[in-house]
Length: 147
Image (tube, rainbow, N blue to C red; front, side, top):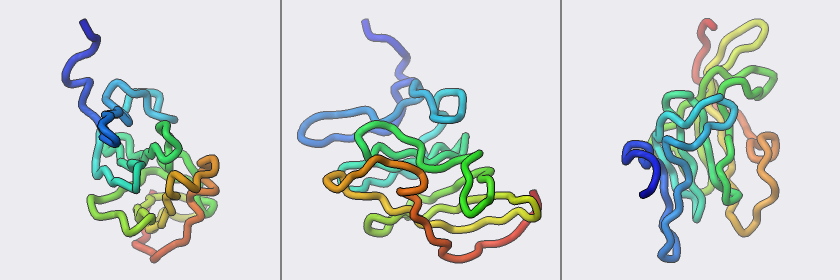
């Protein structure tokens, strides 16, 4: 028989052209987390790609290039601030843009900012890199708090 429990088959899947493909399951290693993916919050479909949020490790993943890639999460740096966690909701998508909240710290402050990531269409893909995909712009300052 096959391996793994039904529980480990929980995940994010796509169905295109009659073919089911696992994007990520609970048996999939997270990228930069040191453990398997723990949650599958707010999956968003972008053409033939998926973006979802690991709501335990606070990481956003995508399969925009056909394989699982980390979009943003703890330890990444935006605007000179180290990300402590990211959050996205079920209605974070508008066209090919994805809005997410990033909680970050710098040497002098802790902030929560809303960013926009542009998710390219598969036919126009270049290699996915945080700097390229997150050609981000700060939409608005959501607040300031303590680290």
